[in-house]
Image (tube, rainbow, N blue to C red; front, top):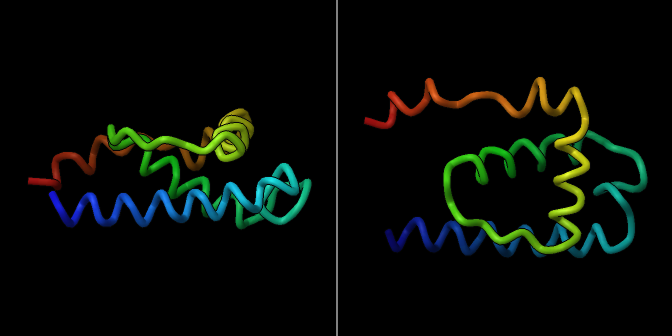
Length: 89
């Protein structure tokens, strides 16, 4: 569990970096969505869909909500990972 907590702490540090970037714009590279948002958003979806309590900084939370409203993000990123659960054993 110590290793998990260590990696989770790293995730929180990265979320703070994203928070700083989002202080200046709606998306990571400006006011339009880019590949940076899709990549980071895909990782964030995977992280938050695993049942971990991951506190999102305010700007990250707003940004993530904007991503989740996009039809393409919902269709292609917010995938059901239940088939991977069987592989955990």
